[in-house]
Image (cartoon, rainbow, N blue to C red; front, side, top):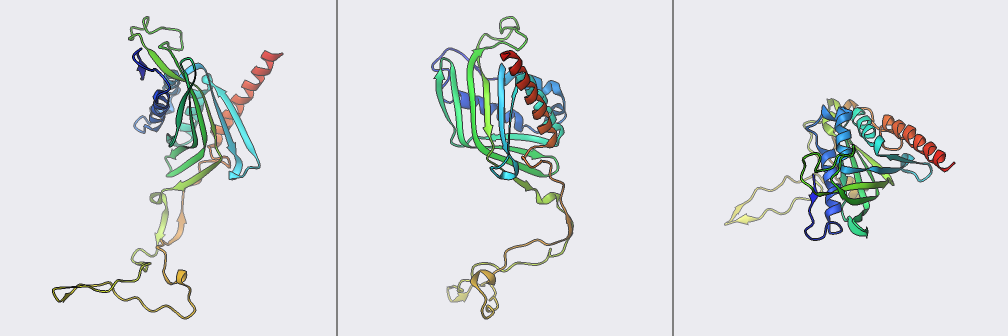
Length: 278
């Protein structure tokens, strides 16, 4: 846990970004497989990294086309369930990649972390890796080290300190990519002994002290009328009746159970807001 004492600037010089990356590191850990299937694990993680009133807002586009989008916004009480349902859907780890992220102070003990080309990567047990790409924003604030049940640091026998916690995360997925590991492809491989032709022509054989050096074998001349891009074969692997695991995500790039969780909780939050306004 990252606690800050009153020595030098407490936020705005990379501390908030470091805190977000610490959270990403916890999501990426794969050695806690059984714990990730327990709600208590995610409740503790959310309590450590988020304030009580934090929110998560996600925008997802269907089939990578800017035609139909779904926007979800859930609060802190829902976050443990969100991560639990995602893990139960076959996700073994998640990672936030924030290359080129910037941090700036926006108020007293508050900073925002922004990345225009962030990646939220989901790795699945069945060999799939799904990467959502888009702008990422996280608001981080400096708060006293108090647990969500109201116990202060002094009361809980922990050292008195300040701690950085996330107040809001917004991720707008512009597109998602699906990749599958070749290790999970099953079937009878037909061309295991074939060697594809190389792209580059063999170079002349040099000689060292009058002794010729072995060179690559000469390739057959190209056929008449054959284009340059057809002369060389790309390396290929051919299978007879190949099988790959079913895709673990829906048209929006996330597991269907995760979307259902977000839909129900977002609707409940919207109703709560309307009731507060009336």
